[in-house]
Every structure is written in C-alpha cells, then in structure tokens.
Image (cartoon, rainbow, N blue to C red; front, side, top):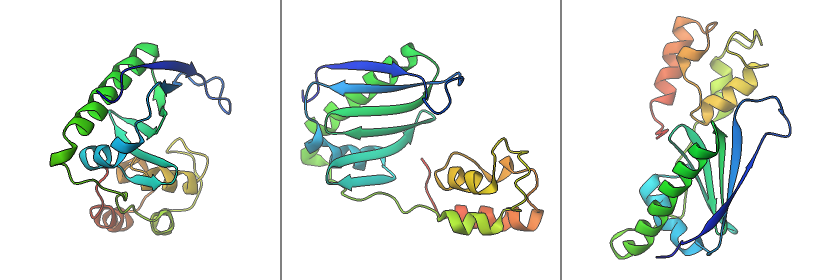
Length: 173
C-alpha cells in the first residue's frame, strides 16, 4: 500500500467567506508522486504537470488536484463529504500503484476547449442571468466542464448549436 495516512484541513474560501461550500486539503503522510501517471490514466486527468508532479481532474462533481503530498478538493458540502472523497481517492491511488504493471502511464492531460473559442460564440452582454459576473467567467467555467450550453439563457439557437458542436469534441469526464 502506497498511501496509508493523511490528515484533513477543511476551510472556507478566503475570497468568498460567505459561501456555503467548504474546501479541503488532505495532507498525505506518504509521497504518491510515482503513482500519479497511473492515476492519470485511470481517472483521465485534464491537466497533468510533470514538475512538480500533479494531476487535476473532475470527479463526483468536484475539481480535484492530487500532488505528491497533497490532495485539494473544492466545493464540498461538509467534512463528511471530504472524508468520503479522500477515502475514495486513497483507494484509487493504491489500486493504481498496485496495478501499475498492467497500466500504461499517462504524462499529459486531455485536450481542452479554448476559452476564447467559447467566448466568441457567447452573447458577450454580461447579463448575469447565468449567475456569473461576466461572459468571460462563464466561458472559463465552460472550458473547464463546469457549465453547459443550456446554462446561458441569452445564447442564440444558432450559436448554441455551434457551441454544442465545438464542445462535442472534448471529453469532460
């Protein structure tokens, strides 16, 4: 077993202290850097950094980054949800490491949509009807897989179709 122990740090966002969601760091007692390319293969990270090693992916509706000695998870309901996800990741890391002989390691992330291409098709009215302050913020969230074409009420049918076609070429899982 590569990863045995960790301790959690649960905190509120400093830039949005009134937010209902909490964030979590799991400080790892063991270094899991060698397992990251195998974890990237299994979980399909959309960003992989080799130095210092880390993999970022979306799972269970969360943005998760695993580095050699830390796991970061955003937008959690509470500490119980943090524990549940970190325990799942612990199993995934250990399974990836134990099965590494049968897994082809992946040292790159998935190709992601370009924010500027998404923004080009958005109405650029900054109407805030989507809940975001600007169309650019919305485009960044869409490029990261956090928003869909149905989340923009001002999008024309023509641009909705074009944007759907553009995003269909990317895997957000």
